[in-house]
Image (cartoon, rainbow, N blue to C red):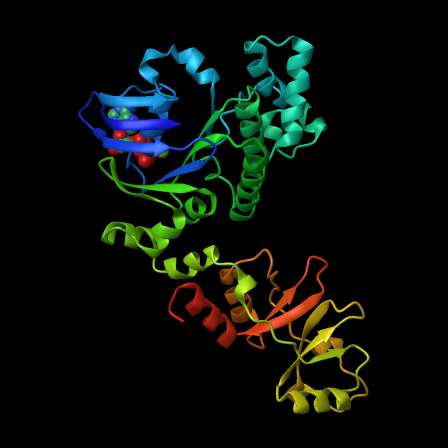
Length: 370
Ligand SMILES: Nc1ncnc2c1ncn2[C@@H]1O[C@H](COP(=O)(O)OP(=O)(O)O)[C@@H](O)[C@H]1O
Ligand SMILES: [Mg+2]
C-alpha cells in the first residue's frame, strides 16, 4: 500500500503544488489522480518514486517512509510510464526494454528474452523489437513504455498521463489493454489523468484534485459520479455524469422482449402481415443463423416479392446483456432507428430486444427510484 500522510510540496519558487494530501492507494488496485492541469498530480506521483521530495509529511510504501529508501533501489520496485513513452530515440525497442532486467542482474541473453516476453505481453509482435521509436505509432510507443515499466516486474506502477497523446480510438484500446494486464498482474497502480472518462473507466478509486494541490474527493468512480462532494467535483465530472453512472449497472436486469422478425426471403406481403399482427411499424431482419441484419420500416415497403436488403436501416449497435451496462443498452436504443436495442449473445445471435420504456424502467430500478 502507498500512503500519503499529510504531504505538502512547495517548490523553491514558492509554488504550493500539493497541499496537505492524505491518501491511501490500495495494493493490487488502480488509484487514479484526476484534475485539471496544474493541480499537483504529477508532483504527487513523482514524490512516490522520489523524483521530487515532499516539503513536509510522509509517503510510505509498504509501511516504509520513501525518503528513507535509496532512490535508485526504490525506483527498481516502481515502473514509471509517462506521456510520449519516454523512450530513448537512438535505441531499438528491445534495447529500450532489456536494460531494465539487466540492471536487476539478468544475463544479456536472459534480459533480451525477458524484453521480448514483455513486448508480447503488451500486444506487440517480436519484429517490432528491432525498430526504432520513430518507426512506431504513438500507441505502439506507449505500449513499449508500458513493457519497459513492467520488465522489472515491479509491484508498483506509476503512470503519468500515459495515454493522453494518442487519438481516441487508440487510447481506448490502450485502456482496455491496461485493464487486461491488470486483471492478470494485479499491480498497485497510481494513474494520473486529466480525463474524467479515463478515470472512471480505469479507477478502482479516484482522487479528484483541485488547483492548489487540494484533494477534493476520494471515492469509487460510481460514488464520484452519483454523489459529487461539492460543486467543483460536480462541474468537473460534467453534465453527462448521469449517463456515465449508468455504466456501473449491468444490462442483465433488462426484461427483453421477443421482436417481430423477418428473414431476407420473407415476402413484402408477409412482412406487412407480421407487422400488423405485432402492432409495430418496425421489423428486425435476421439472417438464417438469427444474426441481426437491420431494421425494416414497414411503411417503406413497396409491393415487391420479398423484402429488399438495401432498404434496411442500420442497427446502430447491439448489446450483450451478460457483459454490457445499462449505458450501452441506452445508447443502443438511442441509436436504433426503431428506438429498440437489440440484445445478442456471444455468437452474435439475437436473444431479444429492449425498447426505451424498458430501459427507462431498468434505470429507475437500478437507481432505486422504481
Ligand atoms: N519544478 C517546479 N518548480 C516550480 N513549480 C513547479 C515545478 N513543477 C511543477 N510546478 C508547479 O506546481 C503546480 C503543480 O504542477 P504539476 O504537479 O505538474 O500539476 P499537474 O500534473 O496536475 O498538471 C503547478 O502550478 C506547476 O506550475
Ligand atoms: Mg502533470
